[in-house]
Length: 214
Image 1 (cartoon, rainbow, N blue to C red):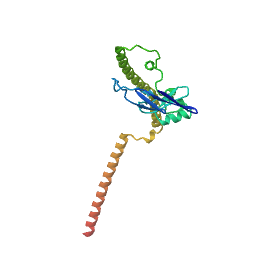
Image 2 (image 1 turned 90 degrees about the vertical axis):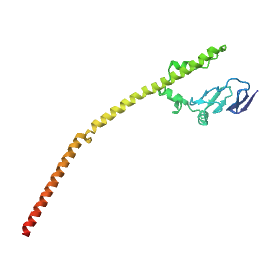
Image 3 (image 1 turned 120 degrees about the vertical axis):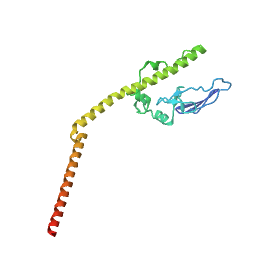
Image 4 (image 1 turned 180 degrees about the vertical axis):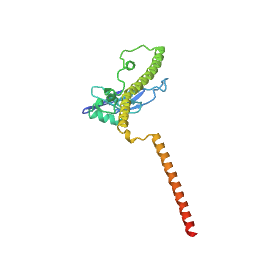
């Protein structure tokens, strides 16, 4: 059963399905009656920030042309209603890819697509596909980490050059450990000399007092 509610420019759909219930754009997940598969769920992507939307979470908006927009939270939904561009919002995945901060072009992204061509069910094919998806995800994460590491190398090199230039500029403020040790040694010699001279003065005073007493 499908019921449509039209209000000005918004269109909300209430659908009662065996596996999911959508009410006013909110998604609740229920167990499918008589289903033999367990611990399986469909993960969607947020339309604005591209983060993962799990079953029972997020907001779903259906436009008048039946196009579905899924959002992970109210923050993304409000930004969408304000017609903000995700590629110009700094905390979105689209901005990071457009700015070259994340891996955007790679063959591993070609595997994950919504294909409209139906495929006849084959258990062996299904199992091989699931295993391949896990391997592809592992490869994708490694390549993304390596991309970020390579991107940060230039910044590390520039910071090292700046540090070297600063040390060369202010080298007169730096004292070597050998010079400090030499200075401490000379201070010790001076103190010893001062102590010996003071002892000699005391001896002379005692001798003078003894002579006067005699």
